[in-house]
Image (cartoon, rainbow, N blue to C red; front, side, top):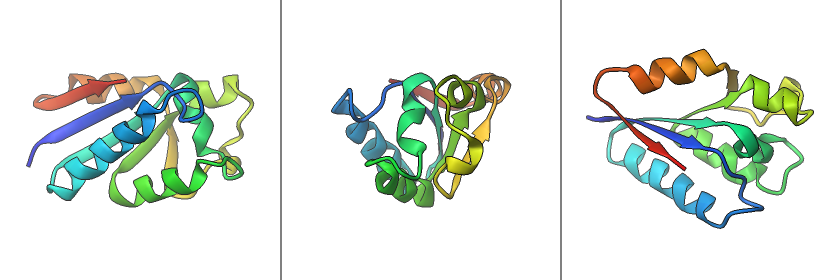
Amino acid sequence: MAKYLVVETRDPFDSNDVDDVYDLATGLADDSNDVTVFLVQNGVLPVRKKSAAAKRVAQLAKKVTVLTDDFSLRERGIEVDEVVDGVRASDIDTLVDLIAEDGRKVIWH
């Protein structure tokens, strides 16, 4: 089992590639890998419960660990209680720790 960190900086309303990244993360998890998706910058926009992409993020969170950068949430006026179930707010220190973790492969989009 390999460990992967997928960092998503874009939102699905701006970039069609985001769905492909979500599919990649899901596929890696389906292959019994440890996968964490960390949403940062505009990548946090679809985590709002009222977002058109909220259902897609909720499905992703059922397969992989989904973390959001708390600073990016605050910067965009998104409160933690507005976030889709299964998605956890985190901080940039956690992202750095995940990147530095021995043996973890990082995919940045």
